[in-house]
Amino acid sequence: MRTFRTRTCYAGRASCWLIGGLGCLGITVIGIIAMVILGRSLVNTVGRPIEEVVSKAQVVVPVQRAAYDALQQYAAANNGKYPKSLKELTPKYAADDLTRPIKLSDGSEVRLVYKPPQPNASPDTVILEHKPPIKSQMEIFGQKVDMEFTYQVQLDGQTYQQQVIIDPQGNKQVQRQRYRR
Image 1 (cartoon, rainbow, N blue to C red):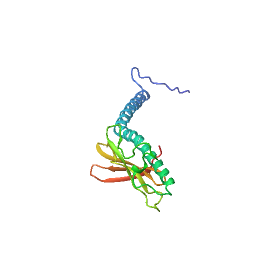
Image 2 (cartoon, helix red, strand yellow):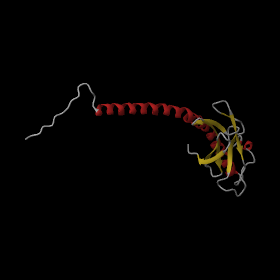
Image 3 (cartoon, rainbow, N blue to C red):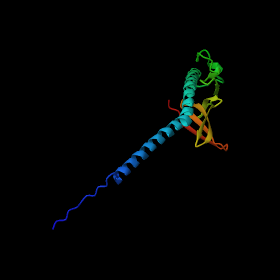
């Protein structure tokens, strides 16, 4: 005797696979929308402040490099001795007055600070930086975080970015990394 399997059809009812597939599709669409919204939020809260700092660094660092080059030329012409101030570099080693303020895109100004090295100074001695620091603020998970950036040039010519992060409670975290732009 043969047994036949019969297939039961439910007229007008959707199968489990169809309902499950539509549910997965709906969850996927909601996930994509959430990622787009979160991505835009991150760009506004993290991306813009970093972009502003980078644009200001692109103004400050070239002036520091020019000052460093002028200092090296001065030292080469004076038996390895460095000047006591940046004013001694103008006009022979630097065309522009390096003591003048550097104007930034937001209208603020910074000035170069020169620290003449001692005769036997270590190559990692900071000889040029700017004051005041470049300030920025971002909001992370609803908390405002203040940041201060200072670009420093060492005696060996390497440029570093010093970043001070200040949380809402006033705690400071200092990071220093080589600047490679």
